[in-house]
Amino acid sequence: MALLETRDLSKSFGALTAVNAVNLRVEAGTLHSIIGPNGAGKTTLFNLLTGQFPPSAGRITFDGRDITGTRAHRIAHLGLARSFQRTNVFPAFTLLDNVWVAAFACSPTWRGLLWKRTDRYADVTAQARQALTAVGLIDKQNQPAREISHGEQRQLELAIALAAAPRVLLLDEPAAGLSPEETRRMVALVKSLKGRYTIVLIEHKMDIIMSVSDRITVMHFGSLIAEGTPAEIQRNPEVRRAYLGGMAA
Amino acid sequence: MKHPALLVLAAVVLLPLVVRHAIATEILIFAIFGLGLNLLLGYTGLLSFGQATFFGSAAYVAGYLLKYYGIGIFTALGVGIGIGALSALLVGYLCVQRSGLYFIMLTFALNQLFYFIAYQWTSVTGGEDGMPGIPRPALLGIDFRQPLAYYVLVSALFLLSLWVMKRIVESPLGTILQAIRENEVRAEAVGYNVPRFKLLAFVIGGAFSGYAGVLYAMLFGIVPLEAIGFVFSGNVVFATLIGGSGSLYGPIIGSVVFIWLSESMSVVWARWPLLLGVAFVIVVLFFRGGVVEAWARIWRFSKRAT
Image 1 (cartoon, helix red, strand yellow):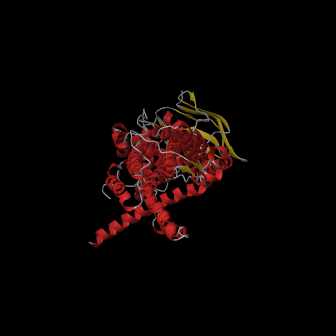
Image 2 (tube, helix red, strand yellow):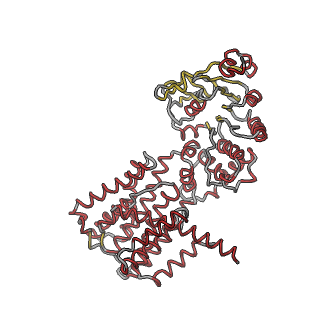
Image 3 (tube, chains in turn yellow, purple):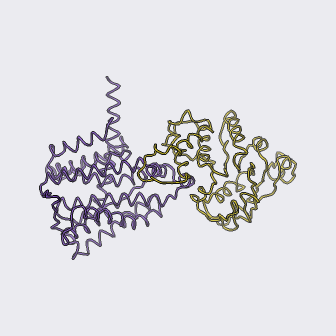
């Protein structure tokens, strides 16, 4: 059975159907990419999966449990963590505090919430440091997030998602706006996470997609038009028409 | 500013030597009120224009019980904390459903609602005349009608509340509230029920307001109608911003400046609020972090000069 699954999932904003009857199956342990032209509804799909807003129709199941309409903060506790397409960190916080607050959210107990000093939570702090180490930012742990580079903020974005020790990572264009060098580092980072987490990845850069994905789903105008391995997707004529458009002609 | 806690302690000891005891007491009471507001304003990023709701409600209820039922000081304070928290729970529940300008207007509107209840319900609150005749009960044989004795009591209670607030802001809750201030969407996404946490901040702030309200009623022996009015709500916001909302100690400094100015200048010059206005403009334009930031900048500058 798939770890994360949607059935006829739809979301309409007025007359616009951003996500249209999507049936997605993400198998445990795989890296599953979702590609599609701008405006295909990829980020809206992510927002539905993580409870940012409820779907207009359809169902979402996670690990056999119906999570349709569950709110974002509950979803995080179930083990789905996401990163955002636009950098979405806590600017005034140090890098360590950025991941600490995420690690605390999903820690097994909130005992001492109102009176225990934050530096007395050794487990949470260790977990936060681990997440920073995983993305290579541990040396800057005491710097405020607003002072680091855009590339580093993208890494921090990922560290916040990792800090909660999730089962599924939903990454929304982790390489958005990165230089070629930073992109290479990000790809290496995503590859290093592969196998340890079930990853759902939205990305625009085709070379990244082709090199890291186990499976690829193609979205177009809110609907899924194809699914398969990277090789299958590259051969699929319908995908070439819809996604590559003029380039394939 | 290496040891702010020691500075506060020194200030508490020196304050009654510099100003009249009643004013010194009022400064500390107002500082407790400001500490509660600042959990919302500085830490959570919520501008509440209705803190007098909790301050006034607690003062009326505890004042009534002190006056007609002869309860003790600590019972009165307990009642005040309870009423402050409860009224904040009611008001907060409605307010946290909205954000931004709507949130601010709701805190203000509900404050007006409570104000008019107090204004109309003259048989209990005394309406415009206020609720006079509130005693300061003796405790362990100490007569708190002595201004200095009452000051000592209030300063002990003030230091206690500062310690409690320090623990709260250094706890995970303090970090979570600041995370909500920094980025509400992300705070929700990493697993925090944002409205619930805002409500918790409201209730704690309300408890502090209620606590201050009871001490205020006992200080002046009356609950004036203004204690539940929006001007009072505005004053505490004003004082906190002048002191510096970015720091735990900001509201204390703001309270010293605000109460001292209003008490000393109002005697000399009827248009003293003009001075406050000027101070406020300077803070907003040049020192967004209030006196605390101004002090830090002067400190850095003088260090560089030597």
